[in-house]
Amino acid sequence: MATAGRSRSRPSFQELSDSVVAIGKGAARHCSRALRERPHFSLAAVALIALGVVISMIPSGPKGSPAASVKPLELPQLSASESELAQPRVLTASVGSHPAPAAEREAPAESWQIVEIEPGQTLERVFRDLGLSAGLLHEIVTTTEQTRNLARIRPGDEFAFDIHPEKGFRALRTELDEEAWLFVERAEDGLVTRTEPRHVERRIVEASGTINTSLYNDAREAGLSDDMIMRLATIFGWDIDFALDIRDGDHFALIYEEVWREGEFLRDGNILAARFINRGESFEAVRFDAGNGPDFFAPDGRPMRKAFLRTPLNFARVSSNFNPRRLHPVTRRVRPHNGTDYAANTGTPVWASGDGTVIKAGYTRANGNYIFIKHGNNIVTRYLHLSKKVVQRGDRVRQGQTIGHVGSTGLATGPHLHYEFLLNGVHRNPRTVDLPPADPLPAEHMEDFSRVGEGLLARLDALAPPDAMLASREVDGGCKSVESSC
Image 1 (cartoon, rainbow, N blue to C red):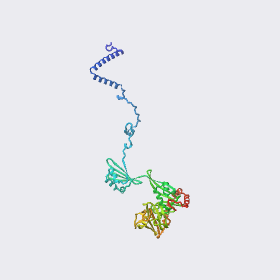
Image 2 (tube, one colour):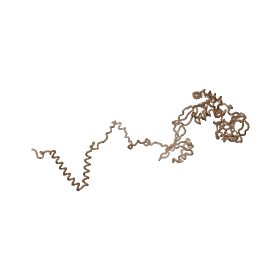
Image 3 (cartoon, helix red, strand yellow):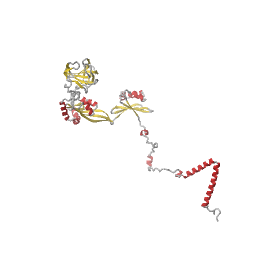
Image 4 (cartoon, rainbow, N blue to C red):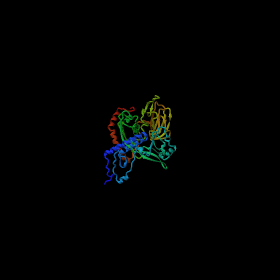
């Protein structure tokens, strides 16, 4: 027989609903009374109940943590060995910013400050401006023979300094020569020096042209620099008087080097071979070193360098030729003009036409400042109307050495050089006198010289072919000269 407790039936849904409604009404009456009696505490309780309801509605992840709002990142499975080798990497970047520059991620070991020397600036001033002491400069320039030359600076020279904000001077870098850097660096036991090579390239180039106005203008038109034009004229200066002998239609061609460093043109290099066709006659020169330093030789091995220069200054205009019965422009008397007058700007360098000894150097009313030089083979050369003399009696001079400067001292109507050539005491025309020949290359060098010159001369034939000589000869027949009179 069942007990009363066990026989009690489960309440129906309607009974439960009526009970909930009755409880709700009772709670509402209780809350209403509580709000009237203690409004502040009642509102706080209501807020806490509402917050609890909201939190209970958030779905949960494993172990009660909030569920993720993004998709998980699927990483590749690493083997045990790969997991041991894998190292964490930390990258920092602000949202919306670019990655940090490489210079900020890893600071360079050296930070060079470049200083270009300006006119009048000294290395001591440069050190002072950078906060470096004069004692450090003295220590640097006395370190080695190479650093001793740093005291002799020129405008345009560049110096690079590595100066640490806390440690101070660490290194100096400058150009030792065009092929190497010189470094002076701070070490634990003092200063040390080292050199570092720079890549220098020598490019072979060619140029050629025809004289239409002047050698200078037409050579510039062909792309030659002023220095290269001067060197071209110097090579043939023993055979051609560039002040008087140049003719319209003459030709020139040359093969030379250009020096480049790190993609930047530095300067013109050596002339390797050259040809000048003057009045239909061709003169060729090839650069060759026979053991005494490089020089220029004709294709048959004869040196281009003669015992005397044909003209003792560069690119002058002949204002008066050698003339035994010339009317003097100042005295208006007929008297011999025993030399050649080269008109040039005051201050133009005047060279010794050959090796010799200065036997006279002074001043007279007629000659102005003058210099007489005695050479071998009973030859004397004279140079008159100089603005300045830079040698004196008894000095030994070499061919091409500057002995004075063009002027207009003495009986002169304008700045020019009066140049005389005496052989055995007799005046000879400097432009036409036969100059003493020079000794040719020794026979043991001719094979090497021929091998060097063969390809260069073939290239000159292509640049200035033989038919150019015929054209030049036809022009000369009409005596059409350039920069001079016939």
